[in-house]
Length: 611
Image (cartoon, rainbow, N blue to C red):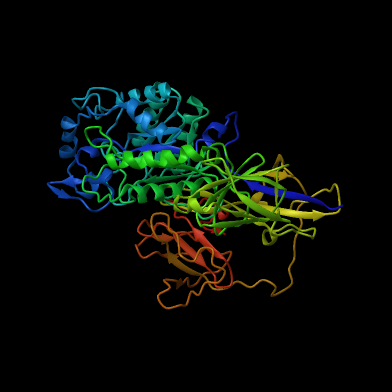
């Protein structure tokens, strides 16, 4: 009998210490509340009687060009007397949220807690005179949900920080970095257990990222640290704002979303529309995240008086009603085990059960697994559904009466569990990137330098042998790297430091490099439309691709990015007006590059990844 082995190689650069991260509690949260509340909430997106339509409303100081002293004087009228932390916690719990992430300090530098290191805070600068964040942390503990904080790494109020800029990704001066260390230490010390700290913005050096990471981990060893701290000193990846990846990730991750993508802070003139379509939109987004193994962080933006916008309250109530009926398919589940999505919807798993989120009615076909289905239930009501199974495929008929319901969820029970059948099985003795299933992560050097990264390979192998001695082949540049190797569910760590060197010689003309092209990416994180396409026509009219001239593989390349700054030592762009560039060869796959603020330190740090 042939034995099937699953090899799962995962490259990681995570800090290895005594920490217990991520905790199962954090992974199982699935759905949390983000709160953007601060001095900017007083403005409500309006300055001098006119709506400020450019940018997010929580950054109105920057987009409206408000002088710092004028903005600071707003603290004298910031008195959120309608803020009720226990009601906020109840709202979150009723919505099905398991934690709250609160803005301790946003880019304006105003602290929503009592900081010892600046009087620009809600206790010392406002008539409110109370530590609002401490009261919320205590309310979370009373309510039995986790408390977390957002902390902006840039600060427009700190005199020795970089001033307001258009991109918000400035480096930190040494004085500003030390200031951040002191503030993060007081937050980690004075506000009880903190589930996660959501760093944002800035462009830190690797040493600065490491320093903040180690500080938080020392004071609160289980506190999860967000990807936007940068330089991969992180515990969980963070997607771009309101971004939903169409692929599974092999790392803990989170999508942060706002009710309306135009803003996070309160906007008085926002056109809100009907509640039901927004409820359905956010439920669909939640499903996209959890079915790919992530956590969903949905934001509200209270008014300056502390009251919750009624529309946002009603949206959360609608989401909570749907979640309550389908909670079993959400909390404590795992991502879809299938390599490819289904046309009818998404899947999560728990134990021997599959949960199907049906977005297209009336009948669904689930295939690509082995196992005997014993029962199919409509999760919200417990009603049985008719089904027929033939081999590795089951067809399920849904009751006609649920055609008007939004995304019904099915519980598919299997007698003795199930196994997903691999789409590709390697029959030979050589495992390579060409016959592997890629494992993706999401790396981040800084706020603008986030990109989909390749962190590992998975193979499903058919072999007649019950045992073997695999040989790992790696280059000298990879020496010292730590791998996690998983075979049939058993994992072991391996450090690449052994073996004997050997020279591999290729026949002449067996490797041929194509021409290289570049293109500025879209949005903050520099995505391009062509990602994932098998063939890209770089010469198409209005494609946006341009050739990279005078480039030679293995040789230093220098040029100009168009903004006057040079490229040095490899392929990367040190130019913030083009925060992320993508390079492509017509004969090869897309290569995406991040844009570090300083040159890489060696050949192994060349600023592009091959996907």
